[in-house]
Length: 227
Image (cartoon, rainbow, N blue to C red; front, side):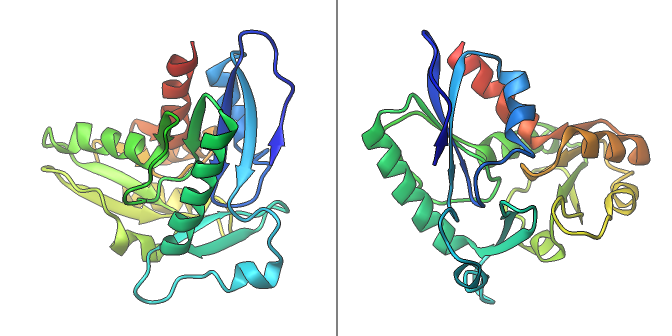
């Protein structure tokens, strides 16, 4: 668990990744949107776990796949049920520490996650962006990290939702190919907190469509909550 010193009038915000902290590939970009009103506290679900333990957390055939980033930049493949349990343990601990806000930096669906502290789940925020267009009859292109997640995707709408995959962590670069697969959509939502602004620009250029980035959607909400 990492934290920065707290200045007067700053809100103590816990940013919880399902990978390992610190998320220096993500949090600086989000904090640029949020502004100086927060003292960030970084927490990782996988913090302190050895590589062999993490390797055993991959999902079985009856569990949903989640992917996140390891501290060294590699990719972790995790089962959603175990992650849900660990997130609840972390939320309970953060409740006891008295933080002002908890932000879950994962767009996976975690049924029944609860906290006394105000809780921002990236999944709920990003899914609402999908629904805002799909329920109006638009076609929404959704980009997820892994091919398996295309079949597991949980958010649907009254309009069309089409999916493609490109990992923000793995070595293979599928962004242009995935963007072309989604080019007939009215709008594209990059449905993973690991996607960066640079990746968003690449997808927008290749698809020729407006593109929403999960981490910017979440950061914009947090900015208003701490203002």
